[in-house]
Length: 382
Image (tube, rainbow, N blue to C red; front, side):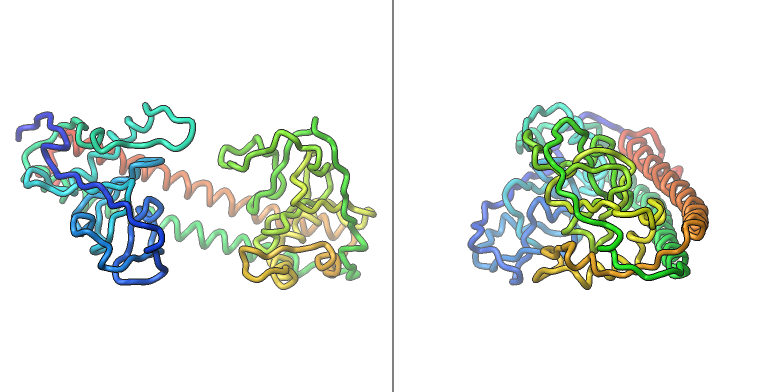
């Protein structure tokens, strides 16, 4: 088996996508259109008529599609004939490559280019950069053997990952069931929220830290998350002050559970609703638990206003009329303790499963790297 350095241009033909006119886009049609956003997603969202598609811009099964903006994503194409839009390119074997081998080998090279590309906005990849990538590759028969081996082994790992992801979904469902069980068991005088809380419009505190609301966590310090890309404006004088014990509600996503009782002092966007306790009838932890329970979230959905879910908003005039039971302080503490104990156990199982998935993905990546660089004798391993 002989490995030698080759350029992508020596192994495959590169075809650039076509600059289709947006006026030709439709929600349905004869030919699906592949845009950068469609590389990793299913099903197709945009279509064009057959008349506007040049034959050279048709991607077919077995081609390798590369996104030339952003993360430079790559996929081995298996979704049937489709039109390839601009800022994408395809690689098609010229007889010197098994394109599956290219699909396994190229992502690491594209990542290096991406890491070394400076940009203040979106990173761009040129066709010449793709053609010029140098890589070690054996003859096409050995490439095919490597691809066959990786197809088998990665399929096993992927099946294992999918199984663990299903387990996480089941555990998340169990967590919601626990919340439903413990909150359903809550008994006490039923009181409307407007008699327990009142909206707060306290603003002009630009010196305070910025807070955010996450569906999974409730109210958190915005700086504590690296995945929050919402830009904070320079002028935050209209941001609302939040004190510990206040409830912060994302009006547009309350029906998804995006609210919670804050443990922090800080400020939030004026698009949020901040309601402050008017008495001590509710323990903060119980309020957090109950206001985020499945039964209350369903109530928020019913009371939200808007034409479609993406436009739904929950206003205090509606939310304030929701009745909730107010158990004795001792019973509130008992309910919270029971829920926290069960949820902590479920969260630990989820964390273990997520770690297993992380290790499986690392194993998958290492296996691919070893195989496409000749560190594994795939014929002996088969």
